[in-house]
Image (cartoon, rainbow, N blue to C red):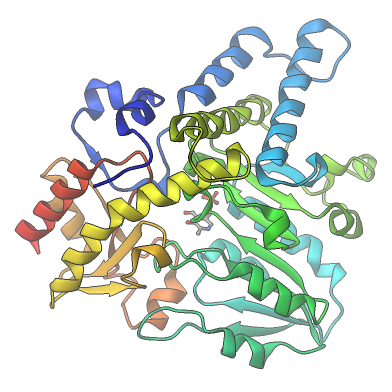
Length: 408
Ligand SMILES: Cc1ncc(COP(=O)(O)O)c(C=O)c1O
């Protein structure tokens, strides 16, 4: 198997791989939260050791604390190819969509329509469906009940001049298919629709270029992208300014505070700069000849190429197993390596059996309750989910296949 990223060099960036308690665990629950990179942990430690004071004050430690937070905003923005004033940190993506939902309550007029999908994690669909109580008409872009695929032709039937907002996932945390966000955004923009994209399941596989995607809001969770437990949302500044202030009244004109009513976690924000350090390291490991216009795109392409190569044998194996139903595409180039299958026993039970092989997988509905319902799977029965990222090794994938073969 030809891999663009040397697994040994990549894994050296994660202290978890050296811990006795995690030794030999083949970790396939990365969609629930990835390991944290040393670059993030170092910044976190530096913040707590040297600058654990109220930031943005007059004295040196306080100024340094504020500078570390500003640096995280700046660096994250560069990696996402937007200006720094797009970046907002909040406690989690669920908390961020909840706040956005409140903000849009008075931005919408009664009778305006909102498009949601039934492919999303509940965080990016429930918050918008609640707008029905404020008079919004909710239109559901439904998945294909067999494959979980979102069909563009179905979206076109929902779009008209009444629609003001559309929320969708970049990739579902169950189906794994990479949705054509730029195309959807183009179609939505033709009707003046604001687009909200949940990138939680996509971002760990390579941060996107938001300018190319074109959406108005992009959300992801730093704790799944080798970082601390924060939600990050990029919001088009002109839209953020238009939305009603959700913070304290005296913060009306403070762009970073208007959409984040919770007091920010200073240390975790500062540590998030380490996510970008790590991505630059990935670009360095990919080498000067790897494709990509800048380090962030280079790292994203290398992560995708690595994961596509690792994913092929698992999908080949599942394709041959007639009694297992894969949700989503079996072509590794069309999906992220978050692979869900329907098994004949409750999925959490099978996850327990796989864990006896020192392999961590998940079983359940993973908060995509509506999606499981839509594809005919009882959410309490759930799916077995095996999710990995670029730091996974070919040997671990082989071990997973052997364990599935023994237990299914
Ligand atoms: C696709 C997707 N969206 C949203 C969320 C919610 O993220 P958070 O845990 O940061 O609230 C998750 C969490 O698993 C997810 O997988």
